[in-house]
Length: 317
Image (cartoon, rainbow, N blue to C red):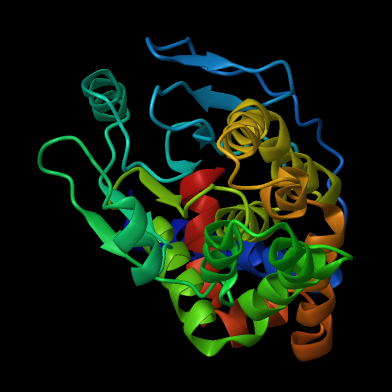
């Protein structure tokens, strides 16, 4: 190839890259829907890992955690699926067994980002991870929700528990937490830092909070939308936590009732579930503060077009 031909090829590649970046920015700004199906085929099953019935959802089966999933497989606006094996979402990993550590080691993780606050770590303990892998702390506020739940349960008083969590108060706490995901500068900094780490191509990354449904659910939703996954599909991934957590959450409520700690443990259900109402509280806050997803990603989370293009290049194309 002569020098002129080389310059021509380089220029063509640059133009294509610029076109992809521009198209990505336009899609994020306008919220264009994706037309691709979210039922892309998964790679061969690995020991300890299997597909769920819901399209594209690939669970990592652990004994000490119930809501661990690969974020790959979802279709994007141009028909390309999100790649498997690069981004994982989870609940806390402080109770992993030796067998779980072997399963996690097979994922080849290079980073585990922990969204839990110091209070949560104090009560639940740090992650137990494969040798050579240490969690990176990215604490995101839960707006006092964990402390409120501990106080209500610890009171052992039905009237106090009803006053703290009943009559729509638990739901209001959840909406306030989701609004803070968008409005709190420290929360935005941590969410943005994890997305930048994902874009850096350092290796597979797993992020989690305590239950793997709220902070983790919001970050997963934002990531999938940033990659061009349609809103309805990203909502499906968000709501899937209810299915993965149902048995464990019901067992906790039953234990609290049997022990006499809570007369009405169903007061906890709004705190245990994810609901579109909660997600909408964050999205309404996003619209009010940043106008659209692109504004939130760039102005709120501090990502630039190179970061967004790198995310897509690494996780999709």
